[in-house]
Length: 258
Image 1 (cartoon, one colour):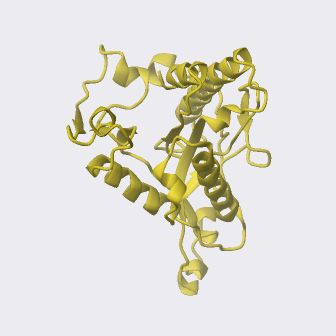
Image 2 (spheres, rainbow, N blue to C red):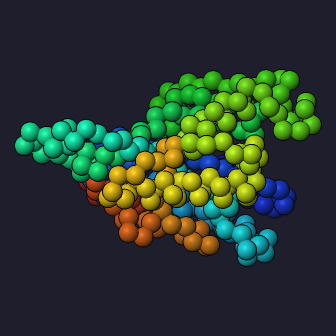
Image 3 (cartoon, rainbow, N blue to C red):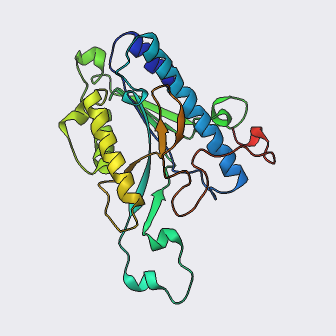
């Protein structure tokens, strides 16, 4: 649905942007067969979405545009300086995450903010188990302010949904910028991506470097044709291992991981 909405906006020659925040890896050991299977299907989903966008750009003859001008994936992480005595330990083995003083922030929230007008927060994941209607039972709450809509204001609404979104952005990005008021703009997309890419470099550096906020680019590379692969040099997750784009497992039935 997100990719198709982007495609419809490209056809209508309207700016539109989707920002998706997901965990760096699913809950559990990213090297394990079940987690690698989940990551494989996540990678397949990302590629399907990017190919939808890339195909629409090609059909509309927009060679100077890139799928990531419209759709981007991120994760959250943190680096925190620890006392030297804790890093040294008492002869106990120190994990690489502790050694390099970094770890992902696990994203467990399921929410979506649309056009600074509508917010939905609930328990459903964006996967077959949650969305099929015949598997997990989910609950969600949707909200908007009737006096703060595009139709009512005839301009960008600036109600509590907008305030909620911008407060999240300020925390995640560690700054406030005028372009954040127009999240659909290419200027905003590029500004957010620049911070996220710089944070990924800081996060993965051996030497301790504080992050600006917590937003990291998800470690994938996207081609103009929508093909997705791991970020060069980061085929595996830092410190913990496991392929970023996952791998299919013959041991784990698809019904358990989709």
